[in-house]
Amino acid sequence: MSEDLLFMPAVEAASLIRRGKLSPVEYVEVLLDAIARSQPKLNAFVAVMAEETRENARKAEVAVREGLPLGPLHGLPVSIKDLIDVKGVRTTHGSHIFADHVAAADGVTPARLRAAGAILIGKTTTPEFGHKGLTDSPLQGVTRNPWGLDRTSGGSSGGAAAAIAAGLGPLAIGTDGAGSIRGPAATCGIVGLKPTLGIVPLETASDVFANNSFAGPMTRTVGDAALMFASIVGPDARDPWSLNAALKPVSPLLQGQTLTGVRFGYIERMANKVLDREVRANTEASLKALLALGAEIEPVTEAIDWIEYEGRVLYQTGIAARMKPRMAQWRSKMDPSMVQFADWGEGFSMHDLRNAEYARTGLYQRVQKLLARYDFLVSPTTARTALDAGFDATQQVIIENEPCGITRQSWTAYQYPFNLTGHPAISVPSGFASDGLPTGIQIVGRWSHDLDVLRAAALFEQARPWADKRPKGL
Image (cartoon, rainbow, N blue to C red; front, side, top):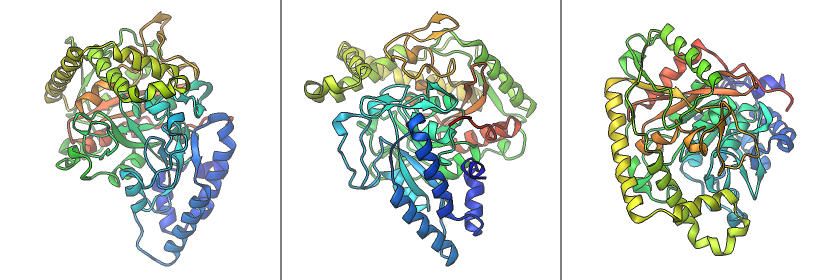
């Protein structure tokens, strides 16, 4: 019974709580016990706010009993990635540099989740400053995949993904600077939405005007992602992109139970030269499910420059600039891959950086042209299943027995382009490979059409349900 409670969809739990059929106090006790039992194996949490969680659960229960107004997330537990501030809790960024930093106030998304009635239960792990697609750090150690403890949970929202997949709460906030919501979602077999730029404010961006980082929901079902998403959208004065951002309503073609007349452009490979055969098979099975729903699917055959090199320039020069003031004091205590990325970034010139910024505009315009032709783009989310938990992010990834470049050139090549263009993108599970690890597909939509992306994903989920699958032995 306790396991069924841990894996209950948030929308169902919310309904039971509102009707007095599920005690928030009992709910969080089951959850806190599961977190404590799993932590030595998974290491998904940096901090667990146990006493605050219990106190807020008691208050939530009283509010139900006394008939007080209830928010849409009333009594639902939610975790926050350790790049986002939660008042009174350490925000370490997975780094010795911030090991003792305690946040003075909630960030935008935690504050909105509290206002919607959610109960914040703790902070989830991230690689140092979220710099790579695996979740391990010198400060917090290795976070493991619930489906295979020798594998990574992905990154940089790997703690959030591992927690959701393992039933350690129904809702989590992740961030996505180069695929860091979608990659872990695919790697751990859950749902992860990167919103349109500005739809969910991100006040923590180093350069808000050139921002390519996002905050978004990570859940086991699309319905839960939609429920959570509705509580975190809207403008915030600290994020200029959010000030005029407005969600579009669900398109007429998506308001029924089919995808009849909806056009998908399928992109089998982006900057990656190799796709694992089992990922391809699961993707093709997913496309068949979309076709059965009435969708029109056409392979995108023209060559497209996905600006992998220019994207790498932007990413690594950004790391170099942010870390330079800290290198003299902290270099020896930083993740070696973080140091290497910064060193690589130092090797690019001013002209490289400016040309990369120009290339971002070109990529945006190319994707816009594709999305004038198609309602959605669809692709695998990752080019293979999870890498080993101890994989060195400076080394080449092996796919189909072939060295394929570092992670951004291979495993995660499908993700970063849409950080740069700002389009909404969701990863949803597409199946399992023979190694027992999940795979995912990515659905990309037009600017501000996040609800269309969620709706298409929900119809796909109905055709190929996955949330009943649970990792064993945790």
